[in-house]
Length: 111
Image (tube, rainbow, N blue to C red; front, side, top):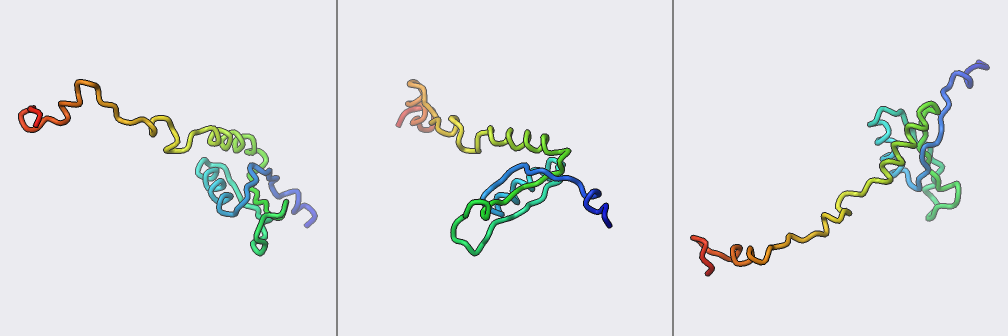
């Protein structure tokens, strides 16, 4: 019985977030990449606001996979969210000679 504590794998904190929902998403992402992850919540639902450590939700991974998890999470933090790229802001530009062609009716004649 005294060795139970020693037999348990050591876990490290890969990310601290502010909600259980966010922690579940992060843990799910890590699991999808083959890294075991669990959510450890200190969040107190009864309080209307987060109060220091009582609002923390930790995503934990095995200590031997902690660096891998941190690198994956860091890489995703650097990626641009969908829809935030400059390409989404670009408007289809019409070349000066193409404007009349877009208004042409059947047979290519402007109407």
